[in-house]
Length: 465
Image 1 (cartoon, rainbow, N blue to C red):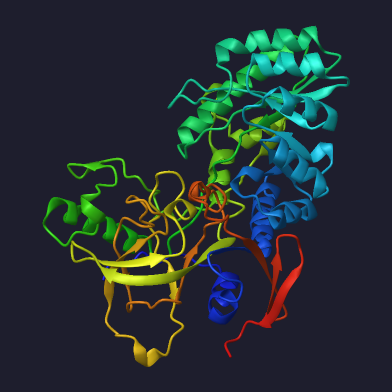
Image 2 (image 1 turned 90 degrees about the vertical axis):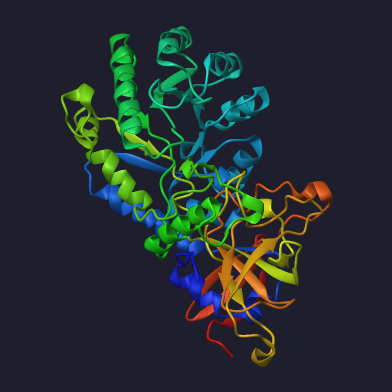
């Protein structure tokens, strides 16, 4: 059997022993773990504390709409990065004041108007945004100017370095309402060289601003920090090799209807993450801070920031939600289809499990709830089907090996789904309701399950009955 064993946080694993509790609030359901979220916050804080650089941590709200996560961020004393009016209102309701709110992403007139009234820091994407802030502001608004780096893949966000002088002109023309707090970038990549090059470019912008009498003091390096998904990286690599062998016709096929997952002639870029990654988000942060800057005589990033009294801001989202959520689904039925493959149909759609068009290459946890004597104890390779009336709705298009074939009513739990997976579904188009979300809080050996409103749903010990 080819396994894709997932990494599972101890608190999550503890709850997974309670199939009765997991099934008590119906399926499908999303379960978030605010305590795990807080542990991730502390891990970033501990890493930053090793460097004598002033810094601020912001939770990127867009990764999950969970009220529990937003409240956990507020209670932890960090900031929040919002990208819509709805997220802004959510943050304010959770107790964030203006000093702890930053707005990123593309912003229309209504959002900018709200931000100028709130007093949040506006991470300006383009010249129009900056002039609109100046037009509607009735008091000084702190702004960052977002750079679109020239190195690597072009981003749709930010302003090219060549366009920055015009933004600085606008700030100088409206100094009474535009307070230049600093510069920022966000790269949708884990390439260390690209991030270091972007920091170098931002430092050039600092020098330009200083020369014009401005006093920027913040460098915001965005988010995109890694998660660790797999418990067995070598097992993941073995699965990928077996998948390729199946595509080449030299071994059993592990893909539905010959899906190549982006491979061409066994090369190409696969449509799934590097699940064998073992470096955490904080490992990546240390790499950045320790990296030499070519434009600064090879001195490390942290040293340059310290010497120039520049405050470091960062906006991790998925790294703070790492291991902090699961999606619980139920088995509807099983059957053999025309290609003689076994299909396990679930009460959930693909886009509630897989973000965008990416395949999630992790085995779920199956909780068998029927009488053990009624199962055929033989390993079986299956495909998981979704509940939409669409041919393309396969939850996984790669084969998953199970200890035994599940039965209707059994639970299939997809782990580590809190980041960008729980809230980006289009299934409502077929009138399926949104998947409800609850929070699991462990205390003194017991789990308390709370609806996102905070109302206690049930309280029960973690040990099996």
